[in-house]
Length: 437
Image (cartoon, rainbow, N blue to C red; front, side, top):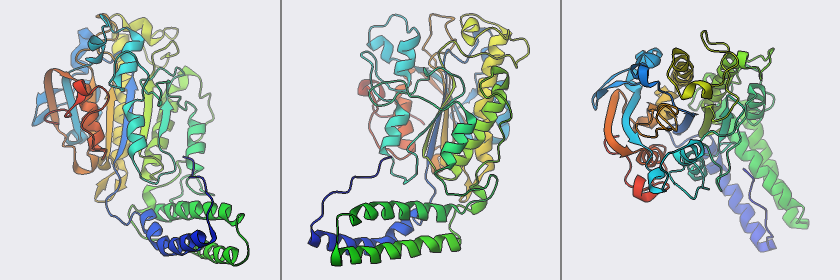
């Protein structure tokens, strides 16, 4: 995010602003330390285009239960110890397409409406970008956008409707993300998160006043120099001593990853995925961003899965999407497993009185259910949530609906992370949020 531009100040205005800044410095420091108490709530949305269900093997994906119980489907078996933090759904439909006059969803209409909650004419931001624009966490990154495969057709849209680009290289993701944490940071070393956040605030204050210094002279410049000296002393103090403020230093560290393999080769997708998951988890633990947009499978022609037994190494997922086969189910199982892996990793990281997962909402969703078996079916979308949203989201439930609008869930998602809206996108299809959630 770009810092605000320094405007012209009169001499009297500068002296008043300088005094106010000196007074406010302890307040800024307190905010940077997270002195307000509870950890922030984060959001991760994971998308996989072209469906997640094989109609002849629906039981592999579809969880069962009711409003007070949950039985996980086989593809979610690894989350059994965390079942109390999972909410599964059925009967949620993308209704924007019918309201826009589409007889069949097709590829682009389904993708472009999924997370924007609007039909034609398209051209607006997705819910992840909206939420990121509304949160004021002081994090270095408003949003991290990550993709496992090459295509940009992920369901995520920047303001104005353009496909949101994402970082595919796990090394670039690691280096670029943690370059904003502190310098130097050794891989695997614990980081004093509170001190780093304080330095981030003080660095911002220093840069803004350094720019102002060029406009001043005489007594005004001397006053500013004295102020900047105080900022430097405060910054130095954070480097010399830990603060002891939660979260603990051990929870935030730069991942110690190595990349001695071709990160672009489909055969190495599991290694790429694992590295991305670890970097995302640590970026959230270090409070470098409140929102992550993670595309596990785009809608394109670049998704090969040669590492899965029984899958043609020369076939993309779309070659399987319009039919039913064990290979299709296994590819979808890898996608679901990637969701489970991130959820499990977040639950391993301590934060506050619980875990990072307890202060996060993770959603897995696809734009279609069966991936083109039934004319790009956008009814009964595959959707699963995990996490606690800081105590707002109760898990261990299977919420069944009968043709309810999926986009009401997006309104509820905004509320879970602290963006209080009555609707998102098309109000006629999203107002009020999702009942019983």
